[in-house]
Each structure stands twice: as C-alpha cells, then as structure tokens.
Amino acid sequence: MEPWILSEAPDKPEESCGVFGVYAPGEQVGRLIYFGLHALQHRGQESAGIAVADGHTMTLSKELGLVPQVFKESDLATLDGHLGIGHTRYSTTGSSSSWENAQPMLSSIGPNTIALAHNGNLVNTLELRDRMKSHGIRFRSTTDSEVMATLVDHFTQQHDSIRGGIRETMKLIAGAYSVVMMTEEAIYAFRDPYGVRPLALGKLDGIGWVVSSETCGLDIVGAEFVRDIRPGELVKISGAGVESEQAVPARKPSLCIFEFVYFARPDSVMYDCALYEARENMGAAMARTAPVEADMVLGVPDTGIPAAVGYARASGITYGEGLVKNRYVGRTFISPSQTLRQQGIRLKLNPLKHALNGKRVVVTDDSIVRGNTTRKLVALLREAGATEVHMRITSPPVKWPCFYGIDTDTQEQLIGSAKSIEEIREHIGADSLAYLSVEDMVTSTGRSADEYCLACFTGDYPVEIPEAVRRGKMALEPATPAR
Ligand code: SF4
Image (cartoon, rainbow, N blue to C red; front, side):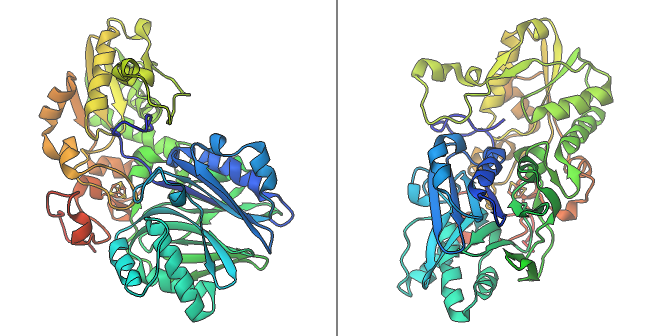
C-alpha cells in the first residue's frame, strides 16, 4: 500500500525517490521524461521536477505535488531540449515542504550549469557539510543531494573534467545513491559501490538512451532494457554514445530487498527477476510455511495481491477479491476533516461485504511497520463479516531502521522490534499471524542473501552508519559490524 495522507504518520516504509534521464537528439525529451516520471510516481509523491537542455541552455521546472499536478501542457511546451533528467521525491533528509529541496537541483560549475537528481541517502552528509562549511562553502538547502552537487562542482574545477569531479565525489560520499546528472550537453548516471538503490539503462532504438530507477520507466517510453548501471559505475551519455568507467571499486552487492517486497512496481524487473513473480513466489512460500484452513485468500491492494495469487495456488484455497482500493485518494495535500480522519483506512480501502461475509480469510500483505494500519484492516474485515482473519506477511518483522533512503521510523516505533510475533498478533487482533523468513523471502527472488541489503530485518548494515546518524533512530547496536 502506498502512503496516503501527508499529515499522518506513515505505517509503511516510504520510498525516497525516482530518477529518470533521456538523451535523444532530435526529440523533445520533456514529454518522454514526464511519462517516465508518471511510471515512477510510486517512488515519490511530494514533489516532481524536470530539467532539459538543448546543448546550450538548461531549463528547469519543478514544484511540490504529484507529477500531473506539477506539469501542465504549457509547462511541457517550455521544456525545450534533447537531453534531460527528472525526479519524483519523497523526502528522507531535508524538509519535504520546501521548493528548494525539490529536485532536480541546479548548481553551477564555472560558466556551466549542472542539474542533479538523487535516489538514496548519504550517511556521511553531516560530516561532509561541516567540512565544507569550514571552507566557507554555503548551502541553499538541507539535502544530501546538495552536498553531492557541491562536491562535484568543487572537484570538477580541480580536475577540469566533470567525470573527474564525479569520480572524486564518489570516493568521499558514503551511503546509497543512484544519481542522474546533466550538463547542457551530456547526461551522467552513477551508482554507489554497493548498488543499494536500483538504476537501469535502456535504449530508444535509433533515437537515444534512457536511464530509469525502474524498468517500468523504460517500458512506458518504449525503451528497451539494456542492463543495470553497475555498482560503482559512472556512465556518460552524449553525442559520443555511452561511455562507461568503474569510478570506484564495487563492494558487496547490496540491492535493497524491500524493492522486491514492496517498493518497486510489480511490472519492473530487477536482478533479472520480474517483481510480480517474486511476490507470487513469496505468497507460495507462505502457504508452505504457514498453512491454515480457510475459505478464501485475498491480498491487500496493491502489493499484497500477487502474494495472494501465489498463496492460493500453492494452498488450493480459492483466491478472491475482498478489498477495493479507492485509487484516486492517493497521496493528497488536502487534510481530511476530523470525521473523515476517523474513517481511517476506509478512505483508502473498501471491503466487499458480500465476498467476505461468513468467510474465514487469509490476508497477504507486504509488511507491518507500526501495526496501526494492520489493526484497522483486521477490524474492517471483521466488520464486513469475515469470521476469521489470518494475516500472512511476505517479509520478516521489520526490526531495524533504514539509513539508505527509506523512511522507516525510529527503532522503538517499529512494532517488530518492540514486540514478539504473538504480541503483534494480539495488537492487530488477527486469529493468526505469520511472517516470511529471510531465507524464503530471498529465495523467492531467485538470488542469494549475499546479494542484498537485508538490514531492516537483520541489523546487518552493508554501509557503516556513523554514530551521530544512528543516534536517535536506533536503540540497539547493529547485529554485526558493517562491511
Ligand atoms: S535497510 Fe531495509 S529498506 Fe533500507 S536499504 Fe536495507 S533492506 Fe532496504
């Protein structure tokens, strides 16, 4: 389920951002980027922005709001150029309501302008900001992306080359970053050495190149998936084609497993695995490890649905629809009235009473963070006539906060950290509750555990988290030292 009301504390981890870039001589790329951002809307719903260039001049348009709220036909008409980048944002650092923090972020390198869009989160922003401030460097925003842009600027002037500037920056910054950046003439894409957040390269046959957080962004503009940008790789796309270099050595691959469980769209492909299929496999694994007698399996829209299909297939229990999503509530900037607020989850999900009445139901959902939404959901299903509600969660309990670009609350707010599974079952009011094991979750994707970041389930953080960053968000020591 995606986040919905801005003013409410989220009960799901929230994705940080989607990034998109196009280099296509002869095309007006503003419109391609607009549709690419539409496909990446689920990754960030607080602001959207597009920067384009025509080889000489750069034009930027960005605003708070959803992609169709931000861009009107008249805005797209002014975005004139054959290369450009775009961004959808959910803030994990910096204030969400500030226009300055919306991306792409512009800065200058000598006479040139750069625009930068970032998905992820740096863990050494504070340290780098302090170091730069002591050298008299000023900041306009509070984001790690600005720190990154400032470093690129600084090192580009030193090396007299943008690629050199990015390379030196990548040596200093730590954490998760999948970045698209542009000058008036070229696009650059680079990814942290652990590859925590995804970034795919695609080709518009005979026209140009596309970079997107997810492959669903390539599909919508008719681009063909070529390959992932590799961990630690820097790619330049210009009139000379695609030039690649390993800017920093790759480290242990650590793609965020939550992309498979919840964040990414089911029609995207990561690690050669179709996410819909991975989620179906997770549901089937749940049916094998946590069987229960029931009349119907249903999924919590949208992410829980493929898992319900998998659970039904493996268990032989009938699959059915029991919840209808109010698709157009989405994330809104309009606060509901108090009366509506008390409706809680009903604003978003409506139960199908005739389908649920008198039934023992198995309900698949992707995760439980605080537990409040799941408790309301179980009550809603009972009110609609379900006689038993068995919750099946297709990930392990979330016990540790994320520092790599996902907003998962402080550790003590995570119900999986504070309570046992039986206590959580009691809290949500379900007849039974089961979680998927780490092993089954990973196996469902066709890969092995050493190719993922699993930190929010295991406490094993691939990139070390500085003490100052950990403080306030983490009550316990990490399970194992970072590598
Ligand atoms: S800590 Fe969790 S949400 Fe964050 S990158 Fe790792 S697996 Fe993903």
